[in-house]
Image 1 (cartoon, rainbow, N blue to C red):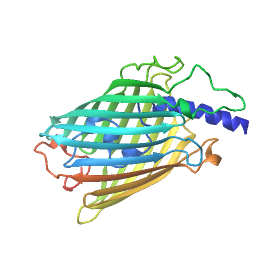
Image 2 (image 1 turned 90 degrees about the vertical axis):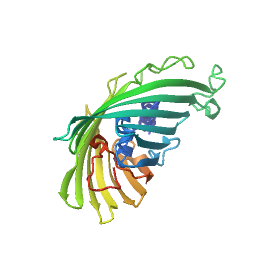
Image 3 (image 1 turned 120 degrees about the vertical axis):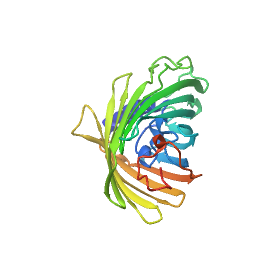
Image 4 (image 1 turned 180 degrees about the horizontal axis):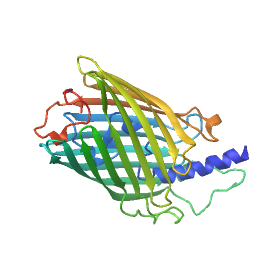
Length: 328
């Protein structure tokens, strides 16, 4: 039991460091919201797209991470897009809230082969706080450190940059998040001052018939401070009806890149779109020593697509069926 508690403590500290200035990426981006991954996807599609996501991690473990986020993006003119995301995250005695303002510009490389190149930029504002008033003495530490006498908080400003290449229904995205070092004045210097991390996201939409599609994809993330990295392998099946509504289901498999044969998270997901309303649910189980102490991670996404308007430029055409006018 002591080993489990030590493991849990280390995992919570590592998770807190990983999430600071960044919401943890589980399967939110697979809820038909690529904008979660990179600002380069802002404005791709025919709608003003809104997605609200809530995620509860390691249900059954006290003070496990919980977060919520709101994502909105829309095309501007014929070749650009703007977006905003707001998020809040609770992880043990840490709290953070943040905003991201994003801009993307889309270019045509070749009309005939439908090759497009996009560039994106996000400006990030984040507040990270340690709740001193929630600290409680333990058997090992019966007195809280008297030097910690108020809530520790720090504000940070940062940037994300990205590029996106598309060839018909294939896409390859590269994104660098938190490219500037963060402030550490309010803390004791134990945490890293670099939160730079890189993401690569790629996939392909395979049309199986007039009403069905299969979408394999992969997502890679690397943290520059200690070179930790992980990879998601995903598969989705989507089926439309005559009204361009659809349902989908799929699965995601995540592993640490130094432990390819050992899955870290695995789980199913499903969703549907009816008229302008979107809903999805995803479940993941963490396959390590914590398996017996929690019932998994749950994520729910609710969305709306408004203001349908086709662009004059094919560079803002979404990755799904071009004949489907209501969906990106």
